[in-house]
Image 1 (cartoon, rainbow, N blue to C red):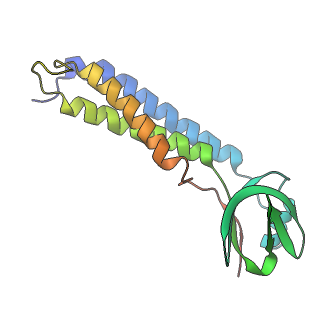
Image 2: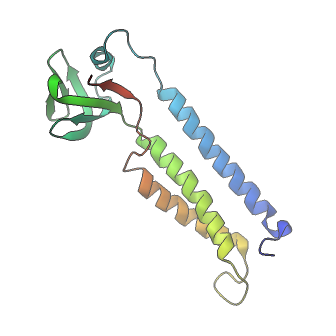
Image 3: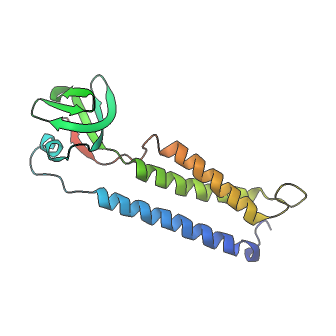
Length: 164
């Protein structure tokens, strides 16, 4: 039997609480960012956003993540880029914090599980210490998860505008 319940009970209790905390934090962050859209067309939704809102703009010839500076009926100015309205395909909110948080939680859980599963007695580094293996796996998994999901903004926010 690979797992012994008496030696892993405290480890899995801590891990399950950690993963639950990350999941609740991500859910709270997602709910806090959700705002009802402004009345009117989708372009009117862009006009209702506060200045310096971080957006991902997809246009016909390019796409960029930048901070909103202004919106009028003809164009969207975001950072140093001006996007003519006719070229804008979609505009989404960014959620880098949520992407990092989910990556950390999933990576930590997977890393801890892999760490515990790789311990196989003997005289190796862990010497049958599943707690140490879980801790090291948790730390490495959290780091890898954050590095993979955060910069890519895998959980990008809702679409504010989409061209018809």
